[in-house]
Image (cartoon, rainbow, N blue to C red; front, side):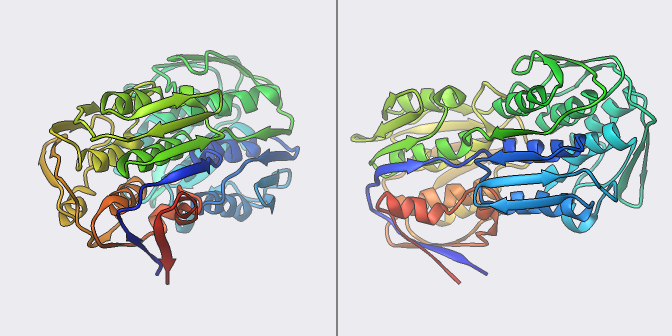
Length: 416
């Protein structure tokens, strides 16, 4: 199993290019199921999660060709409407094939995501939405089984904002009979990216990017060619890599408007930011001030940046309170940061971080995707060597992170 070795203390300097957005590519790839015509996607990142969704589609009979960052998907002759546990257990987002399968074929059998408690996790919102559209749903032997001759438009209002739920129902609704209105819809840019691709293929969608999305069902969608938008979480992560090391980093091929909440916090902590049309420069030539952070659905501060901003706060001058409102178990990186000398106290859904003068390199273990990024960031500024284990989590959402950081001057290598 690979691990990453980091010798901290290098001020990062230079330019880094952002890859395509994982959380945009996954639903867009899943949406290829909706048509018998080929979909060609560009700027698809080289990530483990992308490989997983590719295998899910291939297991159902789709033909998927990859040439570098380009995906060509032919789902004309799908032979199965089942997404098996062996694949879904490795990535919760595999549930995104549920809506497209029911919309096109009138049936789907999709494994419940690994570790999913159906009564408390958002997957139940996907199911409730499909039931409102006339689908019959059974949960048997760890699988969600859905049947519907043709889905019918409905008014669906989510109890809580759910990105994958919004995407699944939106994909189901594009081929449904009549109008579907999604209330309390997720406003994230990834939802807008999916909507734009569906519209390009003939879907009738209004309001994507707001909390009310209106879809008028059509009889069929065409194929199409589309470029995946840049990854806003990768953008924010590399901006913090410049800030935490006291460096001068320019992030290129990004969409600055997608991370305004992160840029606002960086300005408050004392990092200089220069924003251009498709790039951002950060210069950290003075100490980091403490700032309180509260995660919220878009356009609030993203939960996927919480671990990274916490790494920055571990070396700040002062006391910061980081409140997590989106996910119930998203502080599992805290014990590993403490191993590096961070002073963090946990109380229910918030963490109190007292900045220290320096962190100390140590062996640490990645526990999830964003937690692994926070440990790498901490290692960049820690004294001595940091070993980050279980970096397969990192590979799910960051393309060649060690290569990109090395290009900025970091002393970082991946070893077997």
